[in-house]
Amino acid sequence: MMIDSTNALMAQAQASAQYGSQNNVSNRASQLTDGHIKTEAQARKAGQEFESMFLGQMLSHMFAGIETNETFGGGHGETMMRSLLVDEYAKEMTRAGGIGIADAVTREILKVQEG
Image (cartoon, rainbow, N blue to C red; front, side):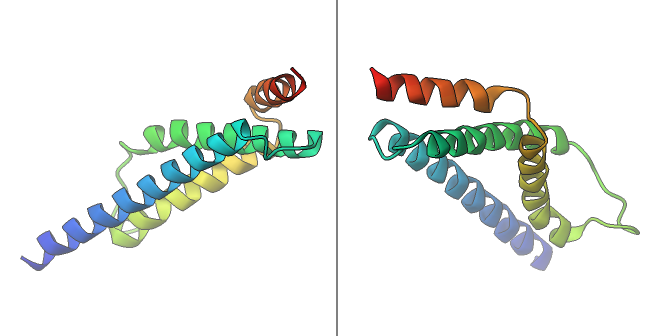
């Protein structure tokens, strides 16, 4: 019984964390259209944040099916920390040059603000 309630709490924590990050992304997207971004540097930062979020979503699906060996990892701690690790992977990939989404988003933000 204890294991079932622990699994339920873990699932709820993961769902809350995922909802929080998605809510943050929607808030950030609405800020892009409300004129909160005033400079090219802010537009570039928003583009990089968007690319990092996109890569994080893609990586999280990739890691979803990976099971870990209980001897060298696994457990509830790894389950909770995996999303943080995936987010850091995505940020580092973006800092290393990414896949080009940040540049496209930056151009579109600047185009919308000009016209």
